[in-house]
Amino acid sequence: MSSELISILVLVVVFVIATTRSVNMGALAFAAAFGVGELVADLDADGIFAGFPGDLFVVLVGVTYLFAIARANGTTDWLVQASIRLVRGRVALIPWVMFALTGALTAIGAVSPAAVAIVAPIALSFAVRHGISPLLMGVMVVHGAQAGGFSPISIYGTIVNGIVEREKLPGNEIALFLASLFTNLVIAAVVFVLFGGLKLWKQGAVAPEEATGSRAAEDAPGAPETNTGTDTGTGTGTGTGTGTGTGTVASPTATAVATHSETAGVIRLTPARIATLTALVALVVAVLALDLDAGLTAITLAVVLSTAWPEDSRRAVGQIAWSTVLLICGVLTYVGVLEEMGTIKWAGEGVGGIGVPLLAAVLLCYIGAIVSAFASSVGIMGALIPLAVPFLAQGEIGAVGMVAALAVSATVVDVSPFSTNGALVLAAAPDVDRERFLRQLMVYGGIVVAAVPAVVWLVMVVPGFG
Image 1 (cartoon, one colour):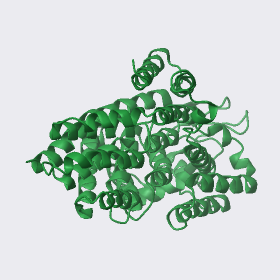
Image 2: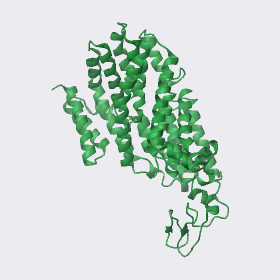
Image 3: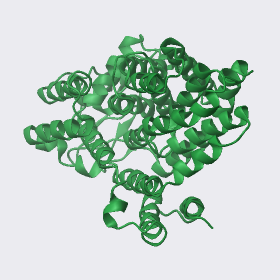
Image 4: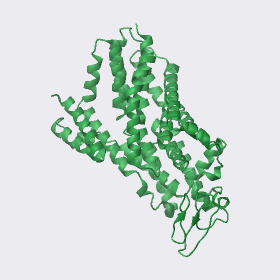
């Protein structure tokens, strides 16, 4: 049995154990990277650690740290209210606002993970408060990022068009952009319908002041010490509440009743919130305009805020999504071992050597989707497009359609929790069952990997054959 095949089988075993025994998949993947790297690939520790995603580690830690502070001081609540005002309180439109926002950021040049890192915490905070499926909101954010990801001035678009030019293939920048835009728009529309988006219309419009519950109550003029997010909730001296919400009391002997008019207040801008908003704007400017690293910038801004307002950020470090960090870093380290030992190249070359162009085309799309669900989308596109050159040179398959299909297949699967974007969504979701959310993202990502490459091949490649 070849070393490449062994490494693939070990990855399957990791998935099975993690699924059936509830062991953190990242820890399993680290162990697998060590075993396969040392015993099969003859790699030393440096070779194994070469695949450790240090940049993604810092992004996950920095962004979740910064937004944990923003949640603690009420900045995310203020942003949720602002988002509601933008669409005049219509809850059903908020997922589309987030889709459009991330799409606009990537279209003008933001790296896709940076756009998701900026938008996802705000979007998911709103989702949790209003009973919107976190999966729906997270998927809308990621697909929005990919919808704008191939504009002629975007990072992905520039890279792919550069590869096409270098390989002397026919190219069409606008066709590539529109292919990604419409694919992700259609998927987002289907997801919106299937995951409860239509039911959100029944909620109608909500007042911005009703969006954030307890934080609004804290800021409401004359609000009592105890409050709930309901119309007639009550608090008791023991710190428990009746109704559909709960409340806490500053004094053990105090008893207070909080009415809707008292709890539904406008969240005000305090110095800490103004500073946090400034930090978020600085993050956007640093990433988009100055091309600084999103993770290092975020963690620096978080440290500055922590120093200025330690009482707001005392528990923020504990709210960093450490289990998600372990999960993603472990899996990607193992994928790095696969790349180091040539497993991915071995699989790609095997497919590229098939003598049936249409079959080779669809298999390349699937390899791009599967590998990209765990590794760099840009990296896999850079590897697969050159592999497609030999049969594209035969003229039987249109180069523009094939390149577009490969590009879409390799990026639309970034909803996987093992890709950077999916990991950011998983880490950004507050107050959710992370194990359940992880399983949902895995299932959804698996469906996308199974279905989308075949569909884009059928729509973009088959019509140009012959």
